[in-house]
Length: 277
Image (cartoon, rainbow, N blue to C red; front, top):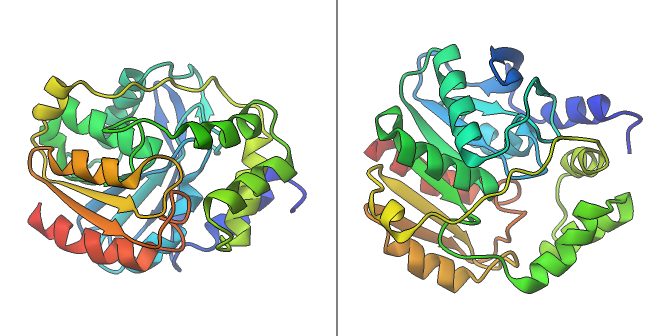
């Protein structure tokens, strides 16, 4: 491992495409650290990382899309990244409020939203709250949206959350990905992030059937066929029942390989969806 989290983050951010920038955007929730790449006049795509991750998780997908999209990836306030929080968010509504401020601050009245895991849950909440601000919605192996976690996943995950050690976090990732080797720069940042002090976890709850029936944004759900986080069959079946939703299943992907190792397949599904928006 590198000597500090900042150095590890810099190495992982260095995997983003050439010309990518890092800026700090002020909001009432604190200073939001933002990774960005792609032409300024291209369609804007917001990338929302999962819990315990950072904006660096999107390096591989950014490499696939940056030539045709303006990619914006923030570190969620209160999580392990480089954003500084003046008041920690305590609910999904707080995070939706933060996103609205960020969207105004970067001068983007409407954007495409892509979220992974808990980031997918947040993206859905934002689309339900303000559909006029979201052109399309893409949910990558979403959690707390249409299905709950597998008990076995939680049994494995909780120790690395409650009492994280480098060995525990790495063993958990190795288990969930079935040994597929994740980029070491990202793993190092993820492990160091798990060992950092950060704000309280924001509790998420699954939207009600009535809330989901009100979804008015073209939606793509990408299901990891070998996800150990939840039952992929159940997620795919329930997601297909959402209004205006297309479901794509990536047979060999797991929950934690999806935004990284499976980026080419994700991009192939996402690009035509963005055009529909």
